[in-house]
Length: 210
Image (cartoon, rainbow, N blue to C red; front, side, top):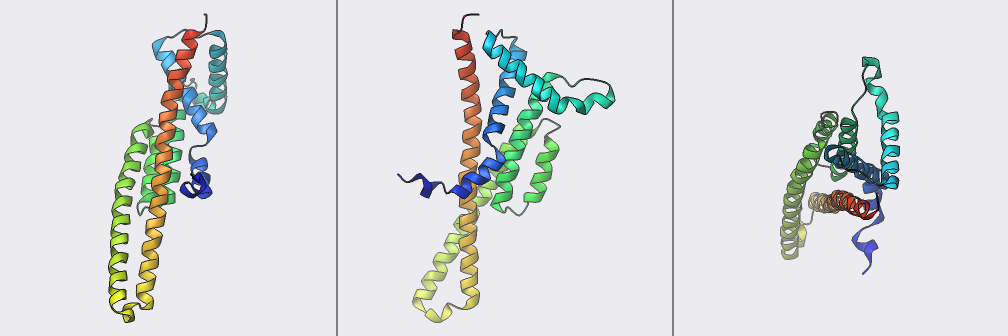
């Protein structure tokens, strides 16, 4: 199977800008930190050192935000902020790439959801919303072009410049939204990877002698 035909490079380049390897690893580390914090789980030496490094890095990057107010941001908030930031960024890039009419409005909602720690809910919901719109748009565009082709086949004089332009626009809609649907699948696959990687982390940690 030729994967390059199924997943052209431009799809991966758009996805990498949204949820890169670094973003996925950050999300995995954040989820692990949250589970360990709330579950009060004791980690083996190496996993514990890895987690402490991640926490120190996150405090260094984001901890300064609260300094002017005279308090330190709790680790659980920073963990959730990292998760929400990656999810919102992935959803924003996917939605913008789809050309969805309300993409700008959705982008504002996603950015506002980050500090409120609601991107974990808003991002998947908006992705699903655009998915429904995309499927409907693809269906309508394909039906419109099929009708025009049948009409042109019966009477070639119908193929005016305006009709050809409309058919080209329909082809663009189909191409754009099909690309979005592929990016959407990668978005969901990355979220699944986070869950699996977190589970494996704790399983392997449990096998290590404390």
